[in-house]
Image 1: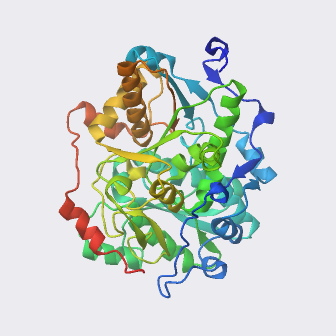
Image 2: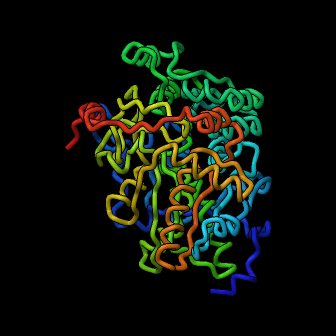
Length: 458
């Protein structure tokens, strides 16, 4: 490794070093993710079946397990130049505060208007929708980062954007909602009375605060019932992890430039977009036997898909209108507690990450939200960035690993994804500071209700 004194506090790549290809980690996986299933026939979904829901080019990307590198269209590269390459930062102040011999780096994805990494895939999906000549797209959003990013991308290409926002986040984060409206999107709290599936969910779960699974169901229903529209998703799907690989590829270019090799790579985990994007090229090296890394997925204890879920086929949405995916899941009927990391309130997990976790290539842990906000506050006070609650899950684990290094004296290099900023999450920070935030961990009995609803697939 090169002398760390020669490494700048913030590593900014030159424009010419911006990645021009996405990396498809599936090409290097020995055990490919299980195919999406048609819920009616229980047979693998065909391209023509998915084309009624997703854009044609995105369907190709979704089903492609073999192409290692995808050229990024020049119009998307040009848009990326607005905020990419994003900085890779050495957390010197945090290291000093912790008194750890560990070296801590974070890839900061909050330096754009959407405030998160979500714009990386939003602009790609909007581009393909525009290329197909569509009128607009529909989507769901949890904390609001994805909805904001897609609203911005659709505005750029002149597309209509209909967003179904998880009700608890709609109420907790009114300013995030208004940013979406500023970009021209319509925003509806989910579940709502505007769709058949929304009305059915409200009847079954009166007073529910919603979930990403509910919002997905509503967005899909609107997309398939309106000509000229398609549905786009901000996480979970293979195509999204492909687009988000720009994070990891860019990170690896920066680290290689200065001879930095991470020992531990950490990301928050809800549906999988940030984590999958950050670890992609590093995981590829591990899969090919070239290098070894330790990967840690961090999820909320209130929605523990990896750590307490089952690896099984399940519906991707609460209304059961989407294809079934084999993933770690709590059951599509599981409604998470209204914690403040809205972007992580999803009952399942990416099929890619689920398969990698199942095969032992990565580990997972769950953390309680008061502990997460304590880590967020500690980070903000010394590093100067107020992190999103989702990102703070990764910060929590990074701090814990750094403190272990303090105990053992090991000089490990830790890399984590700082997925976005928390400036629209001040209600959550207020509750934490006022002592009104609680930790909710579902009981085995509560989780079993979700498992009981899993579809029977051989």
